[in-house]
Structure formats: structure tokens, C-alpha cells
Length: 247
Ligand code: ADP
Ligand code: MG
Image 1: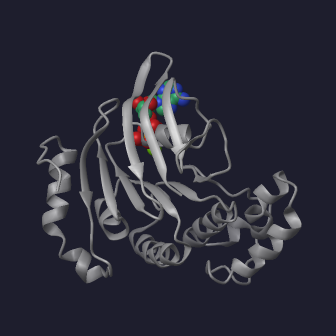
Image 2: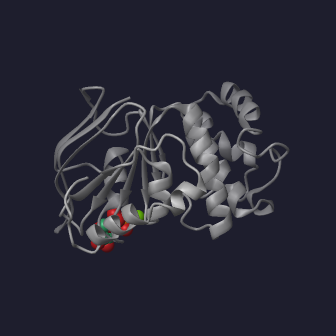
């Protein structure tokens, strides 16, 4: 699915957060959004997901305008938590329960447990799992929505460095199979370089996109990532406000 955001504006009461923002995400493209804390990344995902209403502007999916919660986005919010009193399977099937199609979803969830590294965890509670496993359970819940566009808000932000790099490898492999359109919010430049087809860099609140990089490498390895010093420093300069223009 293709996403077009056109001239989007959003403010909290008198605080302008998104001003005249436009960008496109192509079908199957993996985009990372990088930007300083408080610049409006989570707000943007909330607006796209239909949880917050924009003041003006358009959100188009495959050329058609959408409004409110439309079912085309699978949203994994920054503070996505599993309910501690529900088993992993019941947590993962939460949306199915809400939408009254739990039976079909439960069968699908059981099939997917292994792919998500959760085989045997169906009847466990979140407190019995590691941070990485809980994160994968939250991911599985997101992917079971069957939506075409994934909105992921700093999904690995709370994990330690080793678990985080394992999860990045896992997401990279998963994405090459899923072929979904993905918008990932991160503050980790290496994560953005490692995973994305394109990186959009946001300036402080209201400024919008101040830089953009395309990452062409078809096969990514950690060694390749370590060699990306030049790209990393270009990105950092733009984040710090020393634009070098587009690549
Ligand atoms: P980011 O995800 O990039 O760190 P946010 O989208 O969370 O940024 O926040 C953008 C700005 O909007 C920040 O200045 C934040 O303080 C403000 N903000 C976020 N949520 C609210 C809210 N519910 N009410 C008022 N201001 C908010
Ligand atoms: Mg945020």
C-alpha cells in the first residue's frame, strides 16, 4: 500500500507540532523517521493511525483519502504494553477479540508463534518472558491486524543493546518476507541505516522534514553497517542543524 501525506497540520491546543507536512511512502517501502525528542514523531503516528484528528491536510492510501481509524494501519505505539494478567496468546489475540473474530485469529497466532520466536509461550504471562520476547509478542499482535501499513514507534527503544541488535536482525528478516509498507520511528541512526530504504530527518516541532537519504544496499550485514561512517555523519550533521542537502 502506498501512503501519501499532504499538507498535514496538527496542534495540541496552542502548541503547533506538525506544520504543512507532506511526504510519500511507496508500496513496500521501509521508511525511518529520525528526529530530536519532542519533535512530534509520536504525534504524527497518532494522527496517521486516526487517534488524533489533524486540523487540515490529507492522508491518502493508494490514492484514496482516509479519516479516523481506518483499519489500514497496524500501529504499535511507543508505550505498547501487554496486559500482565492475560496470557501471551490472549494478549496477541486482543484485536481479534475486540473485532469478534477471535477463533480465526487464535489459529493464525498459534501458527505464527514459532516465526516470532515464541513457540511454547502461548500460555505464559508477560512477566515470565524476557524484554525481547515481550516485544516480539507486541509485534505479533500488530502483524495480526492484517493492515497494509505498519506504524512502529521506537519498538526497540527500551531494550538493551544486544537484544536490540537481535531484534533488528529479526525485523529485517521478517520485513523481507512480509513485504509491508513500514514507517519506523527511531532515535537510533544505525537502526535507521540498517533497516530502511529511505530515512527522513525531522527538525524540531513544526519544522518538518529537513533532510532525506536513500539507502540502496540490497543485502545488509553488521559489517556493512559499521562501514557506513560517512552516511552516519551526514545524518548527524543534519540532525544537529547543519544541512548538507539531499543525497
Ligand atoms: P516525539 O515522539 O518526537 O518525542 P511527541 O509527538 O511525543 O514527540 O511530542 C511532540 C510535542 O508535543 C512535544 O513538545 C510534547 O511535549 C507535546 N505533546 C505531546 N503530547 C501532548 C499532549 N497530549 N498534550 C499537549 N502537548 C503534547
Ligand atoms: Mg515519541
